[in-house]
Image (cartoon, rainbow, N blue to C red):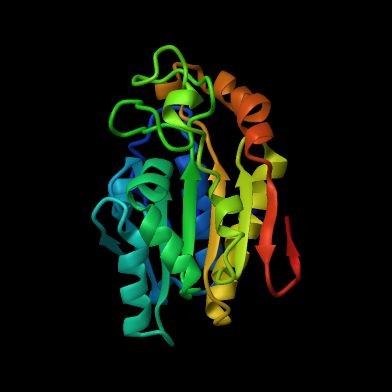
Length: 250
């Protein structure tokens, strides 16, 4: 009896990500949700610049490449072009979504566009060499903050779920993590719910995934997961930040 198998929505292409990177886990969860909801033939993914720029190699659904930060705008166009048929998701990192693409993110949420956004928060610019990101923690050492992020000079990290939860528009905002089995299972449920919300026409859903970047953090994969638990999750608390249907939020 088969108890575990690769989702059909994932291709057989080997992932290009660094050892210990959690992008692969999130890819599987997205593909699993697509499989379980039976929407592969209707789904369009949008990947902008970043570590996931080649996500089109890994998903069996249609994929569109977007300019850096512009994935929510591209996703909006794809959804509005055929709102009854298209199921559209963007897959974005923190440098993309919370920096160059902040305007696109905020206004798509304010308009309650009926799209699904998967937001990978690993507190650093991964693809371009480990520079400080909008989500880098206070005191965090990066290539552009070798003495640690100084909030008196660089300001404080941008907390996307908290910021978007202040808007009237968004339907569903949840922050999850994939650093252990319990959190992976919870992340899978959240991602599936975000897609289901779109199918039901409820509007904008964003799932923020607190993730690790062992290479640019200068850590082994196991130490990076410990750092997620000890440093990132306390600063970026997990949970539902807005769920209009359930009347939940922080």
